[in-house]
Image (cartoon, rainbow, N blue to C red; front, side):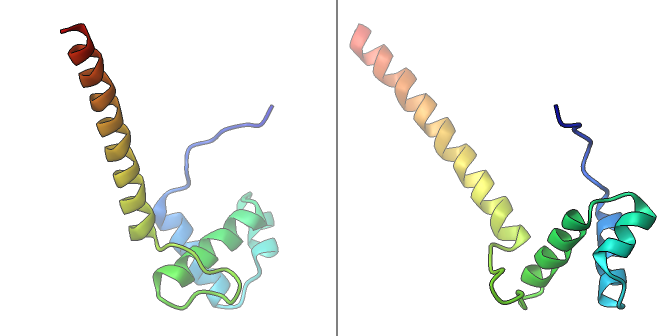
Length: 93
């Protein structure tokens, strides 16, 4: 079973991104800070997307777009639940 840990603080992730941009490798930082190199690479990629300069082949949604998508999905789920409840009420009438 995998261990689940809380997300790393935003400041820590930003610091890792800055260190990679300064020339350190994710593998180096991984050993030094006990974070997976893949996580650091993901943070660097997401930071590139957020800055409007995605790494070729790694295009995706910006953090703001991801947050909006999550918010809209929750909204749709709530509407669906409301609609289902309303349909049950009208069938009983």
